[in-house]
Amino acid sequence: MRSVAFQYHAPRSLDEALAILAEVAPEDGRIIAGGQSLVPTMAFRFVRPGHLVDINRIAGLDRLSEQPVVASVPAPDAAPGTELVIGALVRHAAFHRPVVAGPLGRLLTEVAGHIAHYPIRMRGTFCGSLAHADPASEWCLVASTLDARLVLRSVRGERIVRADDFFTGVMSTAIEPDEMLVEARITLPSAGARMGFDEFSRRRGDFALAMALVSFDLVDGRIHSPRVGVSGVEDRPCRIAQAEALLEGCVPAIDVFQAAARAAAAAVDPLEQPQLPAIYRRELVESSVRRALERAWV
Amino acid sequence: MKHPITLTINGHRHEVEVEPRRTLADVIREECRLTGTHVGCEHGVCGACTVIVDGDPVRACLVFAVQAEGAQIRTVEGLAQGSQLHPLQQAFMDHHALQCGFCTPGFLMLSTALLERPDPPSDAELQEALSSNLCRCTGYKNIVLAVRAASKAMHATSGAA
Image (cartoon, rainbow over all chains, first blue to last red; front, side, top):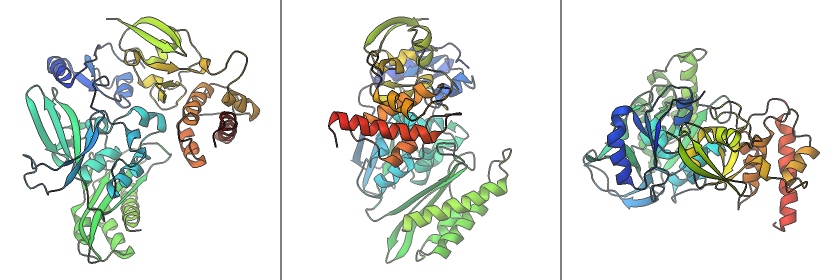
């Protein structure tokens, strides 16, 4: 249970890191941030990188900030507002307390408590989870449901990818071998937005078997712009359009939530795994979506 | 290629040459000869190898030793002052919080980091955090009791509320 040999690089600046990455990418050179998923996959020799580019000594990458939303190529229709910018070295533990006022800060704190265990959260990073793209990752669900924009940089330049286009399958993303995910941007919801999260795992800290994240605004007492995201079920996080359509315009109530939850369960196409038949996963999706909606509403 | 690195462990400098693929847990044990840090699962699940790096509890099997160059590391060997046990060690003895003892160094270092936080954890937070590590024989009840008792003892001594 030891990794194969690799060469180690510890750049002091982002430019230096990207230059090294460009050079070592053809030999499966990779970025290491928290390493809490990468190191075990290396120990099992599921991955055998020839080089690791350690970004932990680069100042400034742990920055969390709020910035005005700038219309960009993948999102020319971006609504005016403010976005939370999460740098590449922001650890899970940074979210143990709300990092921003309002519903998003509270939601991220709730979600962070479900990620692995306390010592893992001290070191693992938000962006690292996105780049690793485990289907059971809480942060991937957050990025997908809240339509995060992912900033990818290389010596060739910078591009911004929407979460929808970013996740391409089990542990697969749109990141090119010479690119680094330098930050994630999430638009802040309205102050009155309702957000809820639910996760089912067999033991505290285990990988989720299903989880749901929902968010909606209330306009004249009715649900407006609902988002329903589910993860841990398919090969990547997904929005459930059928459930969102059922919620739009409705007065929040248990039967409305139940109908949306049933629609989500019917819409997903669960990965089949030993001891986890699809029917069981669908039931978990139904429970998780209903609970997430109830938590958003209460 | 080996890298020359300096690890500061319990205040002592260790100058060692390591391959990048060696984990911090292995280097602490095999190069620095501090075998109090135990290695269980070697992939971040059991927590037996938990040490404190720059104030935070981390799994030493999930960090490469080269990454810890220049860091302040604390291991179970640094807890007792001579023959005077650390309050957590004393509490583990008093409350029968160890049986075979394999997981104990990890629990002690995790608990030390938790109790030294500027905002000591509530009972619920403590219980959640202690679920990070696996114990397969003693059971968690006495471990939770011991850490709570040590928390009281440490805060009484330090004069904190």
